[in-house]
Image 1 (cartoon, helix red, strand yellow):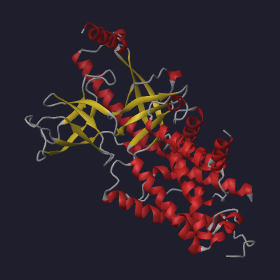
Image 2 (tube, rainbow over the protein chains, first blue to last red):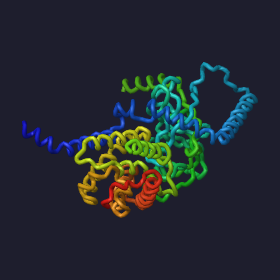
Image 3 (cartoon, chains in turn red, cyan):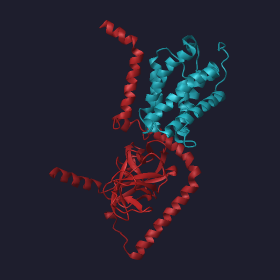
Length: 272
Length: 171
């Protein structure tokens, strides 16, 4: 026993080195580790506060472009109101509204990694929950991954491990969208068989197959179709509507009927 | 002196976390002030505390970067490698004498021999874990251009913030 302790004492430097290596490897590989989802991410109190402080400085320089963006958005909304008024289809029954929006500001964002995350200044105190979808006025942005009281971290659309169920508007074809870490303005459309006729310029929207995004939120347009690959599926590049370089203001989607839908689907599974 | 070092280290960490981590210059250049913290850190023989401090510094960068484990892993590997590498370059006696592994204490040639492989190692580890295609021309360009520009950046920072330590007249 004494010899064993002596050997351990001799090699304590190497042993502690290997222990720390194993620790950090465990951190890297284990994505759902509880310390990671509760404390060691950018939505925790300290980093969230610092990021929002930094954002309050940077925001001043972007006020003009943000104002223009909001004006554009207002124009669109106004046009929609006029359209509904003229068609007398306005839905005044607010009790039946399925989706509610929480507006939030982006306080940290990255685009040059393979797995990018975004930090927002709204958290569980404002009603944000894990798994909610996030959109901007132009298109989809991501999904809430971690939350704290006042901040939340999103898994960005620019994250190679994130897939979104999509629909090509013209042909009603279901497909999946994934980012290939090449260009922050482009993404890949997956699993579209070659017998379907597609055109460059077709628009791609969200499908109704998930409870995260409502159906019909814009994502992008088909930019390039490569048919000459050795596979049953097309190789399609789409150009995203939302530029992630200057993301500043986003909306978190609260689906009030999500629980109902999930419970119903669970029941179905149980019966099978 | 100690106070100044801590201030410099905090400044470098601040630059890493809030400014330079987000910018990719000319498609290939990613500056890493954080690696200078690891290089300047003084040599202590078989010091477990050095490893633990490196681990914690890496953890701080990780928390702000949402990449838990990556930078702590890189810092431990670099500190471990550095502790044996510095003995090959300048020998144990001199290594223990120096308070900071700066270009003024080592001399330009020895500083290059000492720090450039460490910078390369930093980018190799970063590229292996951050990008899914390591053996590509793109990754090679990033490794090459980033290492050179980070080396130049490190020298600039040292000339700006560190003064010549005249006590070490052996070099």
